[in-house]
Length: 319
Image (cartoon, rainbow, N blue to C red; front, side, top):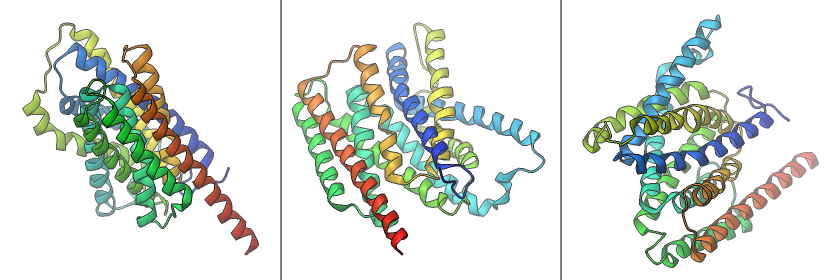
């Protein structure tokens, strides 16, 4: 495997993204359990998730910095790092909060499929206009297929398992996820972005942005079993937040944007399985059909991208 300018090999970047996508798939399930065990809202949950992630990652960062004689994160001046941190943090805040709102409104399976199914399409469109990555015929079919899947999910739910409001939250989350992914890839192309630095301080930005909204919603939840709810919340902070996002930002900086979006489809797949097997959510025919359409659309996008990469390599060889 080749090595990116940031020092992380492409192979390791792919592995990081696979682990991150799988871990993310458990976040929605844990959030659903928190909602059932307490009166915590999506904004407050997102705040505690990011605030806890910031504290944990910053502590790890301090330990690592003491073990090194020179700290690479300080090589870039603050004025250069600040726009990246703020932009990524704002996108992350919208992504997480809107996703939890989608899960609370329309359930784990549908909320996750809409968010992570629409995300790759938005990323492909964004990469086309911002970084010159062509959609091609397969990309156009993928966009059409994803839109068809969303229509089936919204119109075929019968108001039972699929709620349009929840789908709307999922689409908003997908848009923020696309912005975050595109920005990470854009700044990672020159090797100047430190993924560890971006991850830690982006969580700080999210916490600051969400604190006043979370205070209005209610920072301290009421629960019949506070210990159990605390365990759910601790899991969200550690595994699908601190660990998963550290791996995600590192991998996304060296992997093509469309490839990132395809790999992270492990999240809706694992979330759907957890929703049915562990949480007892029912999948209607329309939900299954809409999900298959969206996943097929993204698979088509992956095939199209693979062909494009192969064609580009052939052209370089001929030249």
